[in-house]
Image (cartoon, rainbow, N blue to C red; front, side, top):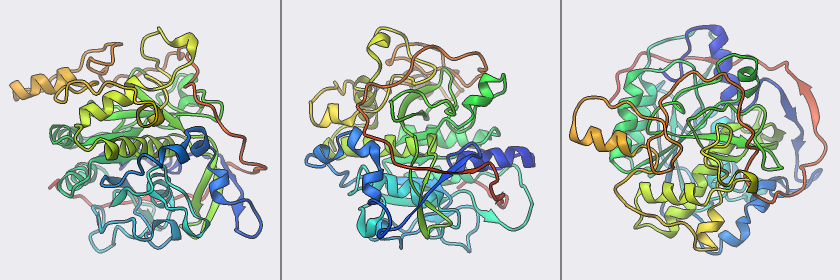
Length: 415
């Protein structure tokens, strides 16, 4: 299962991914009386020209499923934004519960209203469908073979989600997940997943890959810093499709009670990419998932020196720039029935019940490379051409001493 690891070591890796860190947290509690507003700390909104885009689209009419640790709908910025949802790990625990704070952060980055000095989402009129796929537990037990991600994807599709956000990952995968991804793609649902925060490990020759981001049918997202360059912690490889801003940002911490400044990584980046898709889809509700993804790829920003290079292992086709679609009218949506990343897979699978192996290509109109180990040094591409705002102020270094969170679950059959 893509969430449950085979060992305590891999479970700790999952935790670091889920929290959007590499076990190095930069924390600074924020209070309305003692610090600048949370909105002022969300530098990427200014970089992306969010205020201008909101005059055109705020994501209304689009439901984004957040597969995560649950979502607390009672924080000020998410009141009225969160749908009922479900918990596929523990049926007796609601999806409206988040004792880590991660799922609530991701929901806020996507659709927060900013109320009560809370997070302001890039798509503040989108709705959040919470689906709990990981929990914190006091019991140091690790379970294998769960179908919870597959079940969660199916639930999201069946309950009206147009976009599925997966800001989590593991080195362990299960075939049921791929089948659910294929079903979601055929029904016109976009799936975005964080590539992982193991870029430094990859440079030391270790594997930095995680699922479900490595699977065909999933749009793998990397992270960029405030200079719009590849974040050193962001995992890389031929599967990376897009990037989003992932540098230090305000996030819910200590469960959901406080807002802190923390290192973001691919968790936050994925949420920003999902929200970008929501903005575009809200403005163009007649477009298919293939068309929304195609314009995101075609309008992605890359350094001028890399314009003519093939798809980058660091930043894929570049950083998301929904403003190019909403404000500049750029991006040809193209064929509504052809997936811009996985065309071969779904065309052939439609004609045959047998599995189809993806074939590598540098073209955005061709199939994405198949999952593979990639520990070679990355290429020289650096990031997207996005103008970023100033930094978020003084940071207090806490260091690598992080409380251990235990992932638990029960064996379940996919629905």
